[in-house]
Amino acid sequence: MSHLYHSALLDIDEKTMLKESLVKYVSHLQKRYFKDKNISEDFYHGQMDYIQSVVDKLHLNDLYKQ
Figure 1 (cartoon, rainbow, N blue to C red):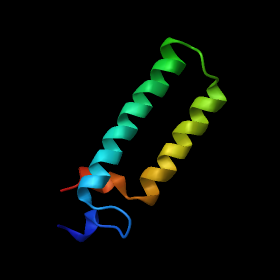
Figure 2: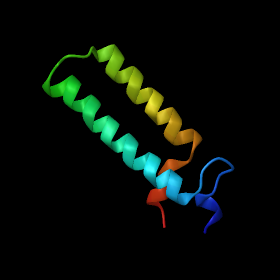
Figure 3: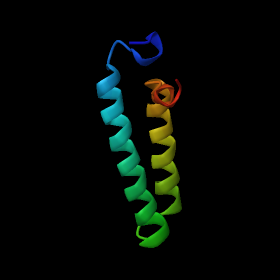
Figure 4: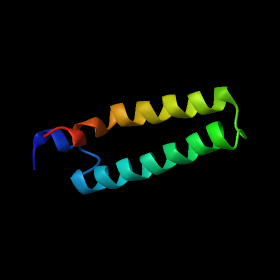
C-alpha cells in the first residue's frame, strides 16, 4: 500500500467506498438541481463545496493517481 493512499482514519478500501458513495451523492444532487429543479442553486453549490472539502481533507483525489 502506498503512503499516498493511507490516512490515520481510512484505509484504501474505505476511501474507495467513500469515493464511490460521494459520486452517487453528487449524481443525485445534479439530478435534483438540473433535471428536477427542486433544490436551490445556493443549496446545490453549498453541498458541492462541502463535498470538495471532504475530498480534500481525506485526499480522495489521490485514488485517481497511480
